[in-house]
Image (tube, rainbow, N blue to C red; front, side, top):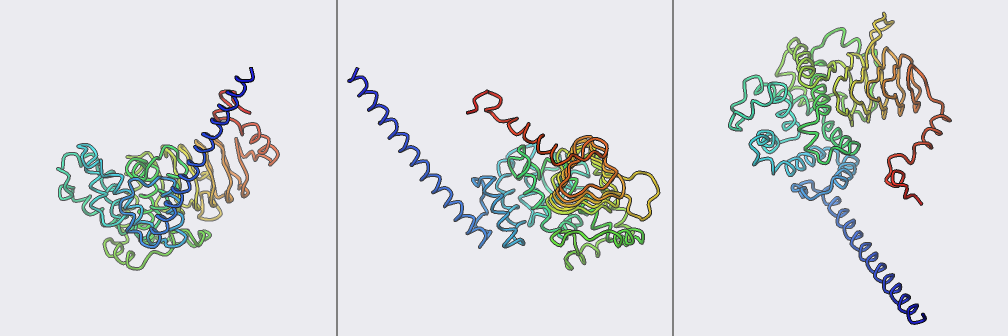
Length: 391
């Protein structure tokens, strides 16, 4: 028995030593990877060109790089994202189905141009690109005209595209690359097209639109849809008359509704870092305002009540970091405060305080109910809660 105990003790010591060695080796390896990641991030911030090949760059590391860049060097955001998209789309160049879309990314000189090419293809009969031998000269005249128009409008919103993609890849587990939302997520496409339409709507100089703009509270200072860059504005406004701009904006809204099933009026004001998940059935009215970092799920309506309004503002004004659940309707000239949450299928016709949660018909959850609900569901969805292996 003593001999057996000695053998067992030696085996345990050997196992403990092996485990400790493996743990230390893993810790050292993790530290080396973290150090290398920080070094790469530091170099990228100094000179974004060193990140031209980002194929092996982990998504969470790249997102952190963008956040650091946004704080220190925001003008280089779009270049970093374009480099990321270029590296992720290399394999698609061999695909007979997706090669035209990959070429739109590889031939672009800026992120705005790449997005303009993709968006123009989509709303002008996207799949015709499969029959054109992959050459932009084969695009119809309407698309040839729209690409520079879209590019100029998107550059006036810089760096909204990059920040929208950053928000999507951060919040959506289904987005495992930047190329996915850029090419295939219609929520991203719908918001980008609205940004274009909004710049054209501002160009239209419609007296009612100007009066509405004067009535609304200004967006936060760090919101990108502020006064446009003068060079881009001159380029855009030199390409299109005021009357043509107004009707082109409405045409974009119409095509976006037909192609994507998303109806956002070009007069609506949308901040940066917007995550519109799935997006099918989203309707946003002309005088609505959406702040920064807002999440909107499918089937959401930001509409009017149909009743006479004391002012020209007929639609909701959303603050920053607001979440609107699937199928919710927020109606009328009401304010939804920063950080508020509107539950799925809720109907809201009264203003919501910052940080509040609304469900059903204007039912505001008390802090006590919210805390109890959170405590009851905090273990749901974890592997150990489902398998009974807690503790």
